Length: 168
Ligand SMILES: CC(C)(COP(=O)(O)OP(=O)(O)OC[C@H]1O[C@@H](n2cnc3c(N)ncnc32)[C@H](O)[C@@H]1OP(=O)(O)O)[C@@H](O)C(=O)NCCC(=O)NCCS
Image (cartoon, rainbow, N blue to C red; front, side, top):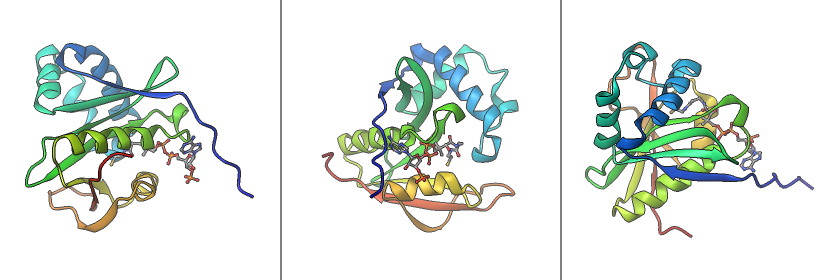
């Protein structure tokens, strides 16, 4: 009999431009810890000022922080749906919080928001070598739909997508 994973105290908080300093802290930690995972780089963002962070948080409509207990441990964003598809970006859980369902919770938050936006699917690009992220997405119902459409630089990327259904 396989053991049921423990339920951790994970909650999501939606951030707006006024929360730019908290977003900056987590996003710089993500770019520093997992440079292999993102199109953006730490060099592009570490000198960014308040205005640029605020613009990032207003240009992208959904910005979620995951808390484990009282501690912010992860983030994810989603873009305005285009032709029915929203884009999941900026997914990260800090190493100390991994293996507890933080990514699952962030994806659930994005899918619920996408439903409210009337999106029919959520898509994402992921580096082909990022097996842990691909496993997270597959576990959450995303399927590989081919090579990424955006030019991802020197690293091959895959496109994954999942239909949006009414939240349970
Ligand atoms: C991708 C990433 C967000 C996944 O982190 P995560 O949410 O902790 O998910 P993980 O896959 O590491 O952990 C899930 C594992 O914990 C297990 N687990 C234990 N308790 C759990 C619980 N209560 N709920 C859910 N899963 C639980 C799951 O069963 C799973 O185990 P498995 O891998 O053996 O199937 C994280 O690795 C990360 O931030 N990586 C760097 C950035 C990155 O790659 N971002 C993606 C860009 S496209």
